Length: 113
Image (cartoon, rainbow, N blue to C red; front, side, top):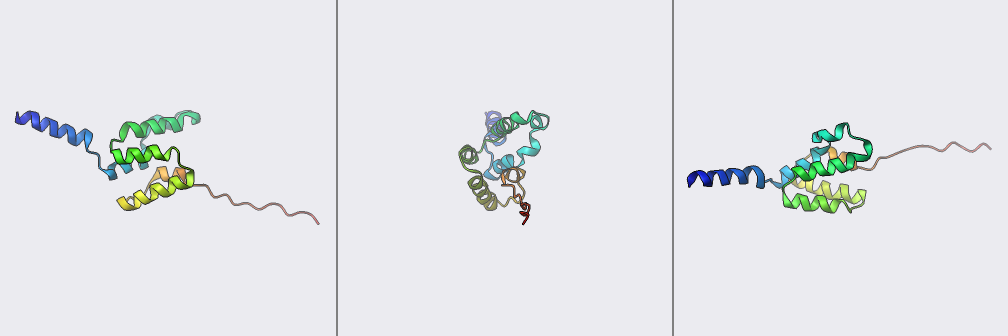
């Protein structure tokens, strides 16, 4: 009976108790840990990345946030995730870097007088 209890506790620890911080790290590190994304056709990368996150994310709070991010505009998505990362003390997030808007600066050629 003790052995059964130990196996149940070990299973729960390994598969069911992902902390919020660990879940956020799954989300953040996905661009680096998604091996199937590396050589994928560019049109399939976003789908594979989302599947990779879903397969490795078990924290319900982070899962709900990830699902909400799908419908958020890019600026809101970055803000929402950044608040959670700050609260968890996570300072590096490659996924957030992917979502950050790209700043493009250029000058128009001057008109001849």
